[in-house]
Image (cartoon, rainbow, N blue to C red; front, side, top):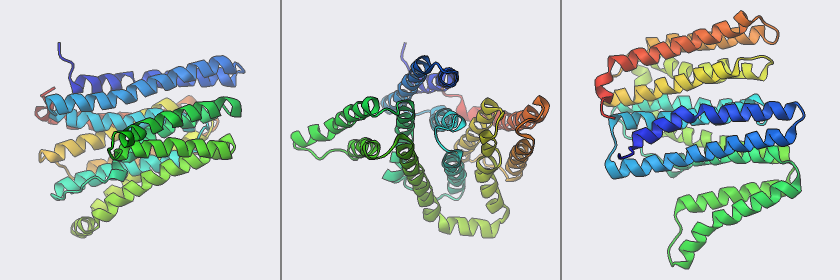
Length: 359
């Protein structure tokens, strides 16, 4: 039986809750004073994250070998973005990184998702730059190193780990030089990234190194998003002049969750898993819209504006009752936002199942 790219992508999606559960188990044990066992669980989470990240390369190989299906074109970018939810929101929820930085990452992801739909509707072809392609690798690899640096603050433990990682990262470009070839930009960028992390940790404290690394991740993320906006500036000006409500839709979808709901996770007692579900569902809605627009199945802005208003309103209400609200006050608005987002996703997908029948 042949394994398809879509099956690999679906397996990655289904397994994403596993490392999240392992991470929270390890973090709870560490907070309870059992640091060694907690680190064991969190290393297990990191190992699963790495394996799932490698499946992204595998499904790319399979897609190139056997061809891309409409369903695969929908699933792969959505699962990549949900991977970021599973990787970064737990880190922010446990104060490994600041929520402000994580919110900036998802502001960019949500913004660019809407921009892609607009570009497709306007028949605008935007060539993805190397920075944009590198951005996902930096985000995924950077998340793993953020966790390692936080888990092992002792110099005598983390420095050998980073030295080995840096040396291994140098092997592909060195092999290319020895063979008389120029190294690929991906291997060169990876070597520079990992050895930059090593230098940061050699020179700085764990907190300072993590802060610097997160600044770099956010910087490259926002820069790649700015490339999209700048490249589409003419298209956007014409679009907004023709339909001003589209500008409101763009801002609402990009800001509703990063500004309206994610900050609540910094307050005690926020329903972290439900908030993750809302963000993952919203990224899925945006990815579905990207795919459907390619087949001429675009829709008006009003459903998106209503969904964004409910999400932002739920987040603002949640922040007003935390900490110390009743379970109904805490979970009610977020569950409502999740139900509305999932309902929109399934309603839109159900109306256009003919587009994705090839699996």
